[in-house]
Length: 469
Image 1 (tube, one colour):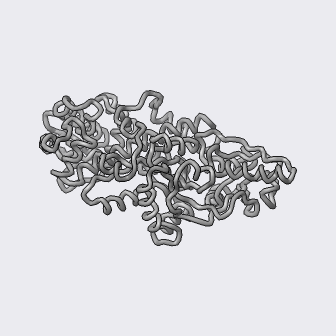
Image 2 (cartoon, one colour):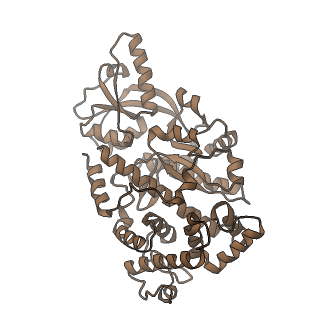
Image 3 (spheres, one colour):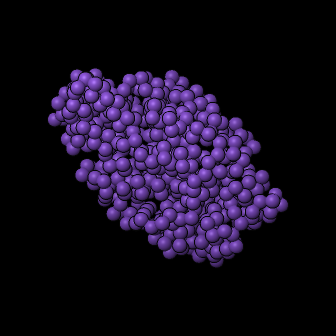
């Protein structure tokens, strides 16, 4: 078991929580199969679901923050859409999936965009439509470990074992190599499909430690990880595929979304100021990869996890939803104080906490601050929103936590006047809130949901990945 996964095991034990139980109803809105082009997504007030693969460079968690090349670019895309659709609600949510699930989930309508540093290939292009690329000239090379015999060409992999992820461009291009080797009457590459919950970065670490003899990676990715694992052996002349293009994929019946992504890609493509900044941040600097333990319970969140679990259980909430809310409120900063006097991780006012509905006087300690915030949230659910749809109660409580319960009562009345359902938040009362309050409260609830979905999916994938090792 690698150091990365030993650390994950310890972290998982530290948070002491099982994710095998069924997901909350809140995620149903994100996970349900639904298909529509960009205009229909906007008109339906739905989130744009971005399918990502959790790894250590394109999408990962650092102290509760979603980071990585794809995370940053898609967040910039959300801002781009907000400028384009000034009078509409635009929100984006990340949905982590294994590599092999990217295109099935996209085609089934469980996501709207596949964003995972995807190389455009013939097979993938038959299934989906790609936007204009944001990076070109990408080479896929063979990578080995300290005891792997050197290779002078891709053909030298003949008869040898290479471990890659099924569904990856590497697997597709190794199959193309085997077709060439067959024509040359040479032994094929022995392609081994790695566990689907692993990532290419994991296979590079395994190669560096001699666990697998060879794997395949984008040259720039292998260069990056050699800084962390100097035992890696890169074979730049053993090119499996040259001149590759990286792009985002959508369903073929979504030309508007494809066109929008292509327009945005022009602003972050290779050679642009923004594109170069994003790429340098994750593929030239090693700030984010020297410590591979980028799990939700690591960093600032780790010492808080048990407290989130304790009080979420006490007041019947999902602790990851509470964690997502706390991150939105304070970025897990206990020293934060708002201009309105709210303090701590949960950004609760001392007067609110000390009042009759909460009864906690000292909110300047971490535990009391978390306890007070969660207890107040429970009070909001039970006393103001018991009549709304069960799956939406938390949404309304979050909105009230942000804007005040009386303001959300006005929002519900306004929703009824607009012909919207006052018992539902997403696609209904959030639109009325946008009309009465503006973007702040709608953005607050949407971002909590976005972080929650990412936390939930990430933790489940990491647990599966740990089991695979």
